[in-house]
Image (tube, rainbow, N blue to C red; front, top):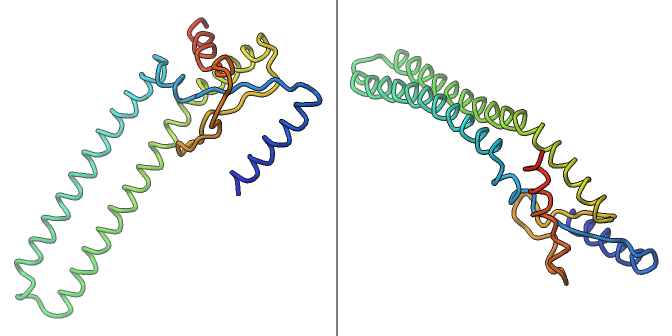
Length: 172
């Protein structure tokens, strides 16, 4: 649906463009971001946080696995009620571990988004500055966040302003 809507939008722009001469460019924001030192530093911070949280999760998973192994070794000596209680406890601990893992993954995503927000705002300002200086009316993203192409073909490489935006960001 998004692709259909985007296609309609682009066709409509080209239809209007033939009348009003709309100047369009495109860029690859990911190509810009991977070259910025600030983003590299953020990625290192996030990796450190991931390493720390991964170790915590691994320790808890190892402890849970040991508890399960211990239970298996004594299971036959327990009554049916004791077995059910211990199994319920182990399942609860496993569910808590999975919930903690999910919470930690969300925390990592939120922290990265929070750290990236000022850089994204700077990139938006740089795009606007480059577009204004080049008298461009519309700047498209070269692809989607999933890697699908939005710009399949451009007649001229000068329509790609990725390098100009990168230079603008590095000059700030």
